[in-house]
Length: 150
Length: 150
Length: 150
Image (cartoon, rainbow over the protein chains, first blue to last red):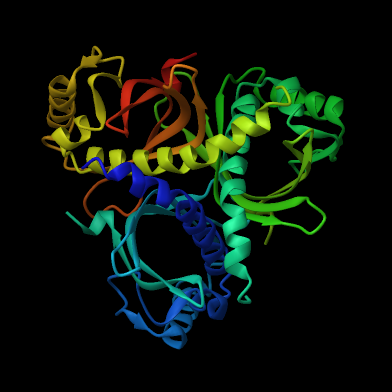
């Protein structure tokens, strides 16, 4: 670190909250399985790689399809409420105007009538964010699951 | 979303951290069962609906009473340390000056000598916040437990 | 609370995000067991008290040694990926320029091939932060584990 870091930090403070708010709304859409609305938080040519079982989805239509298909394959006969929790968010603005982020994620999965959720898996998520018409969008997301990373 | 969203986002960034800090202190009071101090984070005519087993508590006195009573009924013979965790916070300022928030919540419950806590239930919380003498206060809180929402 | 609190709150908003970002990077270093890099987030004369089983470590060299030793003693024959999660962060700037923080912590521990992590223990962390060359540093950290605090 150099002595220029505090200036960079100051520039970051507005962005940090903006990214937190962006992720909150993105997760709310994902957990409500509003697949098209979730896909709309990605850039037009966005890429979403969330599981070693699925190839990366490219473009909003493919991302919406992946979210819908994943939920149908896994949970058609096992209704659940999923909640994505993100934490320990590192936000790194890049010289080209994009923003790299890195954060932890857990999925909280509740089944009907069972107060205690399953909380799994633990993941690290790495995003590249860009702006489209001023709005933050995810250009690339890669999710890495801890239990598959040894 | 419209092209006016970035301006709204910019106005939001100070508020976002203020709400996070407000919730941190509110939760610390709740988890220490400082019932009157917790109730003081609500507006004078605030309303607190936290469980399908309890009718909404209205006004600070009733809110403090509800918190004290809930802890006595549940935990008199079962000492626990509860910790409320909030996440994926969406903050939406309204035209009338109030602020709507929506976020996820988990309750982390530790018993003496047991390192692994029970983490349950998973909830969604919807608040209306207002200002009294400039300070954020909760005017209305409704907690919805996921396992009861299918 | 007095009517001067809103001004204090306004001054806080930039700092709040800076502290969140600081903690994210600090935790990423700790969880990657980059012991020297983690220790470098402490002040030169920083103090780290994270467990009743270890005396407080004083100074960066001792902190790095404690982190390395703790991981070797506990996990040499039991490879894990640990993730420290912080939440409900209260940030309190002090008149002397230092910053007191108080927040909840959970440790998410994943073992190879096991999707469901162990999440324990629940802790409260109290830090004193200072600036060195403008950068936030932890001057003192005391971690209190809930299950040992009854």
